Length: 169
Image (cartoon, rainbow, N blue to C red; front, side, top):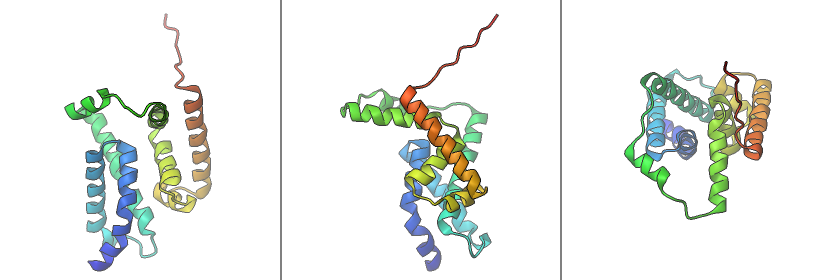
């Protein structure tokens, strides 16, 4: 058990940051990390011996997150009272917080796959190889997806959200 703890424990802070970036709620992020760690520990004996522990943990976390999204889509929206009050409160930091908020909003409008990839590479510092292992695709696919994700994020931040109107007769 000590070897297992030594392999997993150094990655917990990065998992918590990534989970928070995905869900933007500390309690939900902690729950997501706990579910990830529970799954990793219970199935650690099933991993390939040459597998990178960090990539494996991020894969499990991402899969848990996607499963949660699918579950929420089936059940419908849910908003806690505490979360609603937090969004209503004003932010005293001014322009800097507005820029950060705009960037987070733009990031949240990206498709889940692009958002996850940007967070893994730009925030958590995974290599393209590790990201390819997390997503289960070749490195070239990661590079092209990352390029599209960066371009989409840049367009959203610089130009704002574009609304497309459709003519209805």
